[in-house]
Length: 371
Ligand SMILES: Nc1ncnc2c1ncn2[C@@H]1O[C@H](COP(=O)(O)OP(=O)(O)OP(=O)(O)O)[C@@H](O)[C@H]1O
Image (tube, rainbow, N blue to C red; front, side):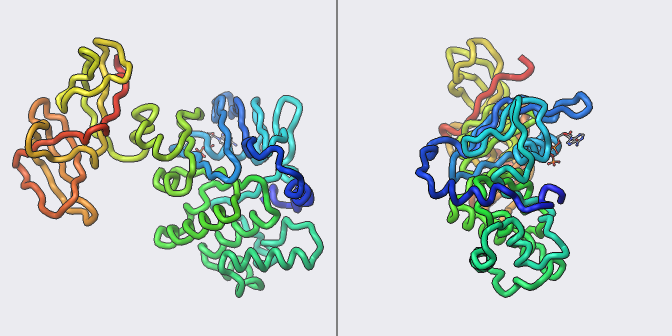
């Protein structure tokens, strides 16, 4: 990849930065403001702004084509923004009068295809960005290879390694010059899924242990929840919501964000006397105006069977899935299709009537988009 064609010249600055008193300790490691990029007149990234705190992992999450990679590439300096600013460790990287090329940015990069140099052995790949004395570099390479469990592979070439091993070399290479910020674009998605969990856990341990600040692109919400201290959800070039995984899961900004993390059950309602009245019951209106229409959304694991109260529902299908069971029903009043994930092996028979109620505090209320 041409962005790795020469060793990064910021690497020699890093030790000085580490030795200096960290007056900027409370500043975010990455600060992006009002970033925009258009291709042929169409906005790929529109007015994106967020921060990544030191030592934290933020995942940029969103569906294919929403602008995640373009955002990451602008932060890396591979793509030039039309407008907006990027600061890393308090230093301007892109702005009205500034544009530092990738090799002058204190970032490490890991890509989906790993982008190892095929003509260099593992040790040379890992040491590529190092500029110190050879003896010191050898020490750093050895330390990293040991840390990623590849000490015995130093003299091998990339084609002699498995996908998981190549990924670990790519991670070690990116970490070697101690970058301020690690940028990762779908770094695990080309791995076989049986391999992926192990490689991902090991990478996460290493990134946490080295207190590396990471911005990682993924389209997989489970991966974002697993890896991210924080998640930034993008849709159609815009940042929709940024927060801790639990905030996004429990208090999504809109139905689209909620739907990213699980199936949803949706019933419609209207606000009367400060509560949304629906076929599943009445729920707090969360500030929606009296008389307005609302969507009440419940995740399948929060729509449970109850003995008394609740809403009658006719069972259509019930399947045991191991960890829990999936029960598909239709509400008796209204006929809306519902999905419930309930623990246990004893399944209600198709055709039988059960009673469903959302767990207290689990419903999400959004304004009806048609209102
Ligand atoms: N160099 C380019 N020239 C023209 N259009 C581009 C270019 N790069 C990206 N785009 C367009 O910009 C939009 C955002 O692309 P981007 O790759 O950033 O999305 P993404 O969220 O990373 O998607 P994916 O997960 O599929 O990689 C898409 O519509 C894409 O086709």
